[in-house]
Image 1 (cartoon, rainbow, N blue to C red):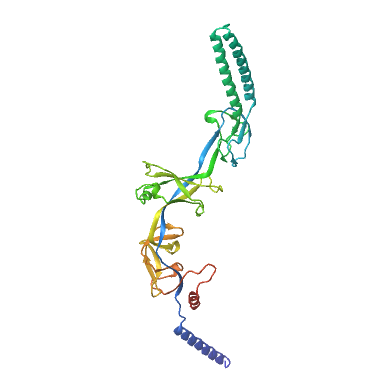
Image 2 (image 1 turned 60 degrees about the vertical axis):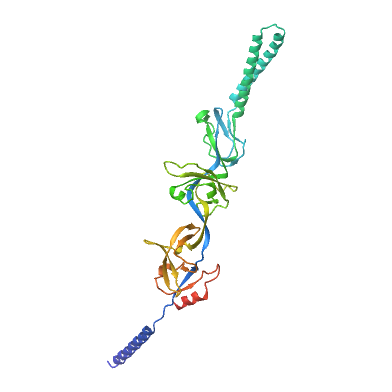
Length: 373
């Protein structure tokens, strides 16, 4: 019992000491520094105005390759999907029936030519009537025409590419019976350089243009935006503008043309077309991530003259790259906060600093503020 009392006394003294230390630290308390934030100082600038819509690519020339004579398809002479030249053989139809027909036509033509020549001398000697000679001339003409048709039919058994371009999938395979007429399609060829892009503008887009419709003088340039968001390197131009509006949809049809030397564009792709329609001056560019969308509209957080958070309602236009085009609500020199937005409260102190240069850390001021925090 004597040993227990000194131990309890020592524990009580330690407890009182710890409580006193805790009270002293609570009274002093670590002071939280202002939140370090990155700000962009707003300066007015001029940006191009544009209209951006969905579009689809198509070959500048899409040509159907059809059989001109019937027969058994013997061979396919090209690799599907490869680039072919004009006149390049694509399919081979059985030649044998047409070779026989050509031999018969040639024999018939030779016979009628000899008969015409024989009767010519007799007609000059008045040994036969003129009608007999005229009939021989006509028969020879018919035979010569039949010979020409037989030669063409034989040549058409080799189906060639009518134009240069990218070949499509073969519709018929070896051994199939090929017929003429509506059932004669064998494949298609797509001319992909240049590439055409078809699209339409609705009423809301047309209302942004001076005349309420697209005119050549209203379009300064055409850009193509690929599926990955990148702008196509080759600029385009309009090559078709409909003179009237679609009465059902209320849209104006357009078509643009882009060079495609690297075959980067393929027919049937869904892309976006951007029409550059002019230039807007005195606007501000704010990163999309810095714009807060609320029920009352869009707003940004700014750092005021006392380095405190000040919400600012803004009027936004269209996107320009990765930035919003701000039409109103900001003044030159305003400091828009672009990070730590979820931690900010109106009136809270901040330590603003400009964006860090690429590959370099932020300035000493934000580093010191972070250390204090």
